[in-house]
Length: 406
Ligand code: C6P
Image 1 (spheres, rainbow, N blue to C red):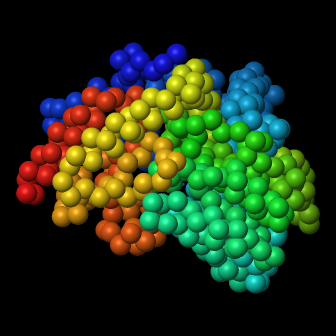
Image 2 (cartoon, rainbow, N blue to C red; image 1 turned 180 degrees about the horizontal axis):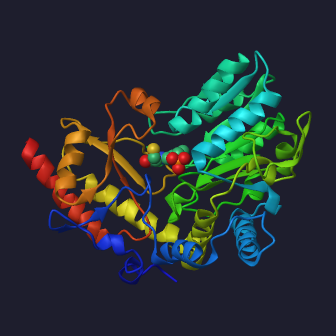
Image 3 (cartoon, protein in one colour; image 1 turned 180 degrees about the vertical axis):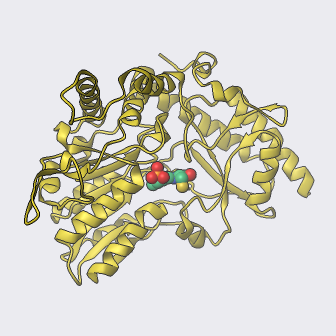
């Protein structure tokens, strides 16, 4: 069914917030989305009626919580169409998922002189873990360049894939530019040379259907809180063959089979990578968020958000001295811009006074700002509950910003 925002918004009580007496316009969804009541109720219900540690106790509550957790794993498997449930590892979020791969994969498969490829439009979470891993291994971090539109240079990418390349780590959707990268094609090119690919899907899963078997990626990372779920929980998908060969990332309870002072053996997947008590409540909350997305339907979510994206872009174009940052042909849910004569922070501060929540600055993607030689951008990032009316309110506010600065 097409999205009816009037009904949908009722599921998000926080959207009724008033800021300085004005209705909140929440355009900071790439940072984190708001949570529907169904997710909040799931969390409450877990702690109220189901709370217990999992995979440990033989008692009723523990069994029930274990079943629920394993059910969530199946939901997640089908959400991304993973081949096996044990290829889904629950983590704290995208950042932890990437760190897991950077640490574990590199410790086994990367040696001095090897190369890891990332792109010019990565979030810091997909830069720094590789920098650290490369430093430790005396490997080289190579950066796939992008053009002025914010599209990756595919010819350069092809040339960079070589004998020394050990892994490609790229974002599916740029959080600062909104660019949707041709990840399937990029995986195909890397695989021609037997190079595995990890995709940072933090900004993709809220907006589009992701099928990891169709993409054929080796790893895929995302966060629950950017897709209507709780904070502090996310997923690392990894192909069984890689995960089985990789050493544990963290150690402790749950990830072991047998422990002795002389020798310890490790548990099977996914437990090998889930040391300690897992974040059961938030995994269940994330499952409910997925059910919320699936009920709306990916095609309806995309249609609604694309309509908003085009409407917002068309309206903003009418403003004087506006510069768009990121004009790729394939974009989703993010409009990044700045006024040539106004610092993005000043624009953001005025918008905030008028009840509009946007993010300003480098969006944890400083190399992108360096590339464009700008101090930062104003970022409108959209979600399924946003409306054209909210864009009109934002336009009025931006018109006021322009009037104030001349
Ligand atoms: N970007 C933004 O405002 P975590 O914090 O682990 O859930 O996600 C990190 C991350 C990784 N990759 C991409 C592409 C991201 O956009 C993010 C988070 C937020 O753009 C917060 S900095």
